[in-house]
Amino acid sequence: MKKLFFSAIALVAFSVVSTAKNVEEKKAETKEFKETVRIEDDNQRTPCDAGWIQAYENAGGGAAGWAAGDAWASAHNC
Image 1 (spheres, one colour):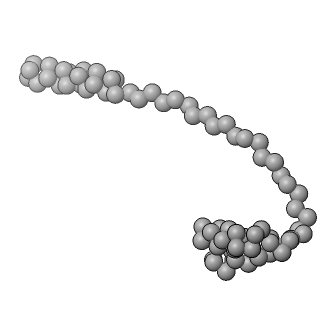
Image 2 (spheres, one colour):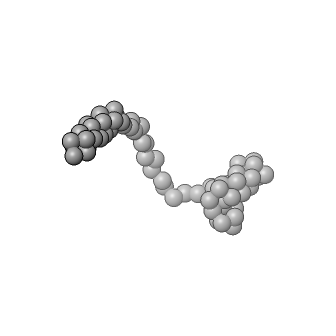
Image 3 (cartoon, rainbow, N blue to C red):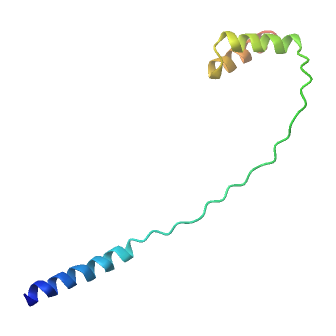
């Protein structure tokens, strides 16, 4: 019975020691944000703007739309 009691105490003691070494340090993360600048939009579109937007929408938007709009602008010297 004494061996069982001693073994239980030793098991608990070694468990506490092993978990104490596994404590992770957590560092606070900070993020810096750059100031954004808003540009007033007068809703006046040039023919180049209109063509780019039309190509973007025809391609379905997203990355394909950007590529299509840029290709259209390059082809029309905008």
